[in-house]
Length: 315
Image 1 (cartoon, rainbow, N blue to C red):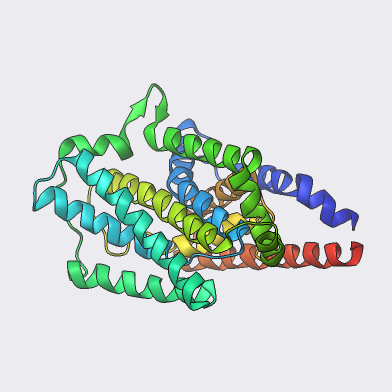
Image 2 (cartoon, rainbow, N blue to C red):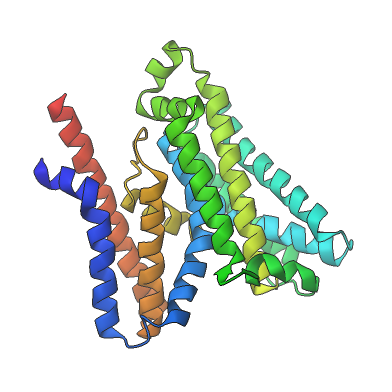
């Protein structure tokens, strides 16, 4: 179908452009430099996680536990720095290792027990969120070292550090998916896991590695969030599972696996960030914001399903 192929190639860019035009007309403060920088910063933390979630989805899986991972990893990092007085650099290394382990556990459960990824990661999300509230008694943890704030609040020239980290991760991820055998194995496994297995791909090991990668980049986002707000929050990342999935699917990453690009997912992130920012400027209630995001997710999934049907008809 022409409409589906046109949207797949240009639709998301047109959508973003129309969104920016509409909100610039509706609110005077939207196109100011400070607000644009706010949108970019907001995009960075979410975007880092979306890159990891995109890897998992392209490989045929899903990860709803990223919000819980962000909360628990942030709390552990804060406690290590505040109570045990660990060096922030050592804490960051530990956080990345913990993030990879969290992701790998998801992958191992999915692969070894053959449980649907949505069910597994929904379960781990619930467990991690509960742990975050149990450890903190529902209260934020304050008192982080001053130097740690550079990661989330610092600049390199005019560009915020989180944005530089996000762009670096997005570029590396795009290269891996497009130019390496590992990336091709991910697409092959997501497209048809049985065919990939017969072609010699160790799909079980690949899926575990992909979940570990998602945990790794989620840990990076957790550290940036911890640094930016200067406290560990048990509710940190509470909406990330929903926002990541919406941004990825909106950007062309297929729920069925085997299809999608990092560049598209990045545009999806910007669309979500622009929407949230503009609605805040317009003093729209948070619950109404969730209504708009829900509509976006349904719209994106509907288009994804149409693309799948279109492929089947052509084949």
